[in-house]
Amino acid sequence: MSSVYLHHIRMKRESKSFVDSMYAILTAAGLFEGPKYRLSGLSGMAFKFTVHERLLPLSVTAYGQWGLEHGPAVDNLGLLTIWDGGRTRHLTFEHYQKDAVNWIKASLDRGLGVIHWIPEFGIIHGYDDDDGVFFLQDGWSQEDHIVLYDNLGLNFTPFWYVQMFGEKVAVPLEEQVLESARLAIHDWHTPFKTLPNKDIASGKLAYEFFIGALKSGDFDEGGGRYILDSYRYARQEIRDYLSEMQTLWPEIAEAYKYYAELSGLIADISFEHSGGVSAMKDKLAAAAQLEDRAIQQFSKLSVRYADPSRTIETRWNTHSSR
Image (cartoon, rainbow, N blue to C red):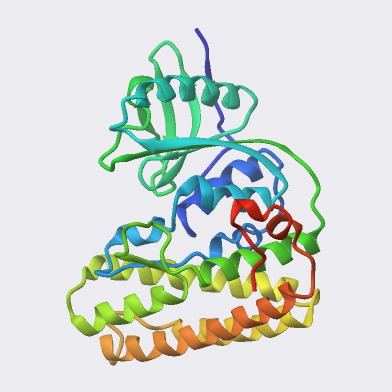
């Protein structure tokens, strides 16, 4: 029987929970260097914006099928990644659960933490075979959560998810930035990521859902606050990321200007601020226009360069962002 506890991994909640988890794991392992906003930008995670029609707090993490969303994000960092997840009601769950216990421990033995849906996303940074437990961090508390091997994946949501990282290859920065722009284009122009359900909107349509909920008055105010805080922080990340990358192409510099203006516009919007909901609606509508102009700059950049991953294997029904 053995145990591992990775003391050097410390998660802090600031960004999306997946980004916070990934940043803690990768920086501790020496697989990423730089500020968190750069990781959020390069991975494309900063651009993900989803809103439930009633502003439920689940909006912040309901940006699609997680593996399909996180896979391209991690690929753009040049990292090998393996994930598993699904619904705990499936009859095969216990078999996948047992397999996940083994490869999570193997990752920890190599000194690499593992992302886990708590919910929201957190990190597994240790295990103890004698007690049959994993040690988790949620980024909010300094105290660990304890999860039995037999309870891995079980939570108050219907879903379970775990993801590990492997070796890294070097990807030129220009390629990473271009791909992050293409990921942003895709998210902006994909209205629904959780089909067949259409109660959660993505990208451009997410703004309409947010404004529509405010107009109707039928919304979860606590969820609205959380969505707003996450949205504001992500747009600041995008602004800082593009500021750093704006010398690469004129289109990135133009997009940076729009996001800088957007960040200033939404800096003080809240449910308590002067003007309240009415002012929020107006500013969100203006922010949507600014972001649309920024995405148009990304599209101008994208069409100038070949995109083999989306255009060669068209049988996979994926095409270059336009």
